Image 1: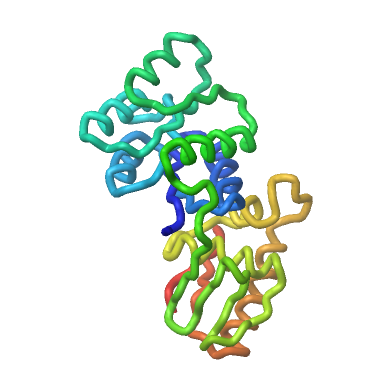
Image 2: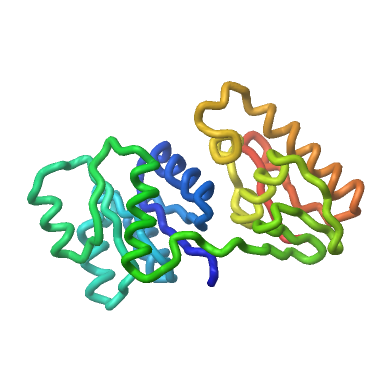
Length: 229
C-alpha cells in the first residue's frame, strides 16, 4: 500500500511545522498549505486525509470542507480550530468533518486522532515504508538504509533522517530551522551550524566517496534543498 499522504492546512507556521514533524516521525507523508486557495488545490490533487484549520486566509476551513464534499471528495477531514463553541463543532460536522480538535492541542493527540480516523476509514494506520529512488541513489525506509548502486552508504541516524526529510520534499527549499525541528526536534538546544555540519558529512559520503551527482544544494542565507541526481 502506498504511503498515506496527509495535508496539513494551517496558517500558523509554527503549528504547521510541529504537526508535519510529528506526522513524518509517525511514518506519514505530510504536505503543507498555509492558506485557503492552496489548501483547496492540494486537496483536489489527491490526499488521504486533511488536517484543516478553520481560520485559513483566503478561503476558510468551513468553505473548503463544503466545497470538497460538494465535489464528492471523500478524504477524511480533521478540523483544527481555536474556537471551542458547540455551534462551530456542529457546523463542522454538518459540512462533513470527521473529527474536531480545539487549540491548544498536543500533537500526540492529533496523531492519535489521525490514526483513529484512518482506521475507521479502512486505511492502514501504519503506512508501508517507502523506497525512494533517485537514479543511482535509493533510500529504504524499512531497512533504514541509503544505497548508491545497491551498496549501503552506512549513514549515522541523524544523517539518514536529514537526507530522508530533504528527499521526501524534492526541489523544496527547507530552512535550517525547519530541518532542525524535523530531524532534531523542538527541544534541541544546538544551533543552525549543526545542520551545516551534517550536510557536509552527507556530501562527503554521497558525492565524494560514491561520486554521486550533486543532490544537496545550498540555498544561500536560508537552508538546503534536495534535487534528483
